[in-house]
Amino acid sequence: MRTRKTTLAGAAIGALGLLGALGAPAAAAPAARNCAINLDTGAWSCAGSEEQALRDVGAQASIVIARTYDGTNYTGTVLAWAQSRQCTSSYDSEWQWADLRSTAAGNMNNRISSVRTYNQCDVKLYDGLNFSGAASTWIDASANLANIGTGWSNRASSIKFS
Image (cartoon, rainbow, N blue to C red; front, side, top):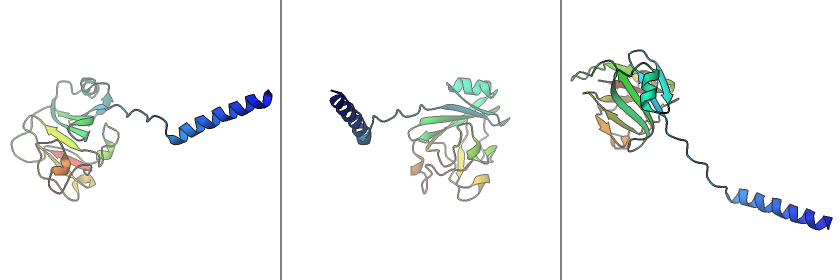
């Protein structure tokens, strides 16, 4: 009797191991995060909602000038860029962020896939830190940055706003 129980137990453990080798159910994708940066102060935060992230950085009364996303079609982690006034109509780099490795979303370096702008603003992306390397055109909105110029999806390391 003891041998049979051991054999059955061994078979059950082996079957579980085989199921694991065949592939366990995939883990759920991490939830998108809502993050905000106050361009006037440099403060940043991620929270359960964009409204909370904006409050956390003291930008609740500020103007959101752009949202960048790490997914195409405005999906995934959203990073709301806010400051105290609207952009002007000229392209003069009114605000900028030199290193996307240090953003509220943790590290948006080479991760921005779509962008929307607001309040007369546009963005320009650079593939190097500190606005070095190739630069995109000024962008108002793009659901898929791969379609801009020579392709800007997951390429930006720094960003300017005007």
